[in-house]
Amino acid sequence: MSVVGNNRVGIPIVVLHDAEGAVIEVETKKGELIRGLLFEAEDQMNLYIKNAVIRDQNGVKRKINQVYVRGPEIVFIVLPDMLKHAPMFNRIKHWRKHGGAPPEGVGQAVGQAAAILRKANERRRGGFGGRFGGRGRGGFGGRGGGGGRGGGGPMMGRGPPPGQYGPR
Image (cartoon, rainbow, N blue to C red; front, side, top):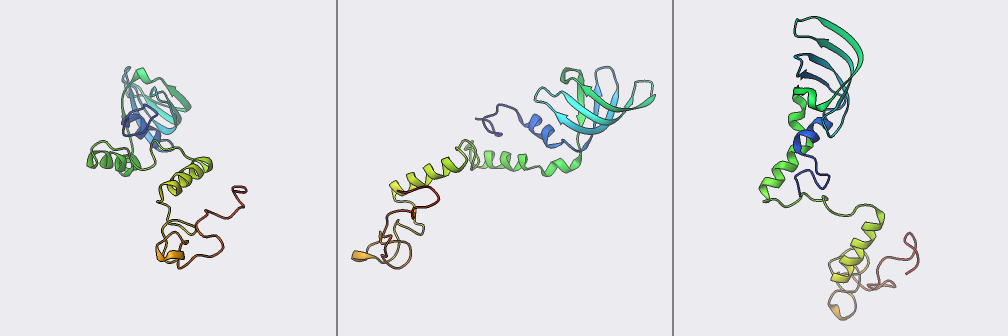
């Protein structure tokens, strides 16, 4: 698994996507310098730049509303300094600190259905110490299982009440 998750793109591509909406400068193989607003970047480094100023190798400038630069034609890209603080670099620090363990949330299922399944698994393992059930204080027998805080009540350790997720 890469630092950026399962989508198989590298760090430079992710940082390039983070630069969308910022002013960048691109040098092409022909020696042209293109400066403008990065509207869209693709994984192959194809760039869609708006309000571009193109300077050719002779120094002649021309303005163009939009330009599409193919990835293989790019020599280098100058990105804004603000990207030094991009969230991507926090993931890299985490990656290095924890020896390749994926950051929290990467590789896990997301969404309401996944949350329901995670909570059900936590309840089965006894790790869910929430409001209803788990190993709370008090209850019958004096040893947990009596429901969240201080005692057994009508819902004594049977999970959440019927409602949002349907009847139990």
